[in-house]
Amino acid sequence: MPFTTDDPNVRQDWLTVGPASRLLHSSAQAPVPTRLLGAPLQLWRDAAGRPQCRVHGRALAVQERYGYLWVCSAATPGRPLFALPEFGEPGRRIVDCGGIGVATSGLRVVENFLDMGHFPYVHTGTLGKVPHTTVAPYSVETDPQTQELWALDCHFYQPQASASAAGGIDAQYRYRVMQPFSAALYKSCPNRPGALDVIALFIQPLDEDHVVAHCLLVLFEEQLGDAELIGFQHMIFGQDKPILESQRPSRLPLEGVLETHMRCDLASVSYRRWLKARGMRFGVYTDVAE
Ligand SMILES: [Fe+2]
Image (cartoon, rainbow, N blue to C red; front, side, top):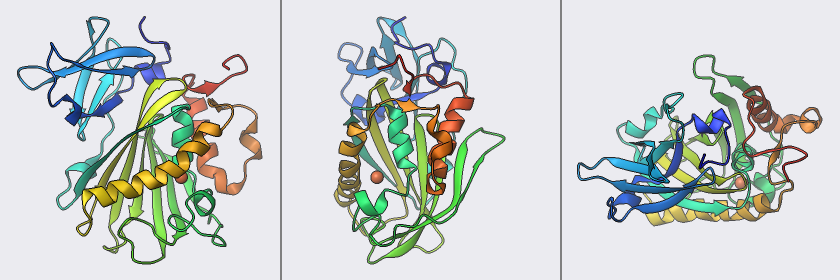
């Protein structure tokens, strides 16, 4: 088996291998190399324009959605790719922020994405500011139809909630975890009251301890250019990256510590419980894993 795990949570999911634009100049003779779950992949677009994927000469299922390529490493995909209806909504702007390599488990990256408590300390002056450190109560639920995890009614004071924000707002948030390595943030749009921007995080697990974190913006934003929007996201993620890479263990523990978390960590605890209920093993810390 070319892949280093048999965990069905990742083997039967559709996992991203990056934006579809990377296949622009590819062909069967000049494929684009990448990695997924410890295995080397070759990607290209065939003469009919369809994306193709191989691992050690064997074809894998690949599809193009939301501007990204998605690969399923199982012989038969276990479930469809999640829905992201906002991607096709009129008036929205799509901005691919590119991928950032992070030397840690992808589960750590998603858990950090769900955490509002670090905003004033790590993203000082943009997503948070001391003394506005209180995480107000919010609720978490699992959608019975899709099994997706949602954190609802979140809000947090932000001095500069986005690249185009002119002043501080009490930003309204909703978090959604579609699958263990894909999450989205629905956030109040500074210039359009009532509308929600979407910031999606698609993690490409190269292996258990290394990922590429891809960020896709689906916004109602008309003032700023792509470079400013991308620059803002990279600044924010650049603040998270060294902290993520210094966390030990790099794989996410699902045992023991769950009951001692504080109220503000509800989303984190719920994510870990959600992973544990699915029997997640890939990227999870066990005593013999490191
Ligand atoms: Fe952060």
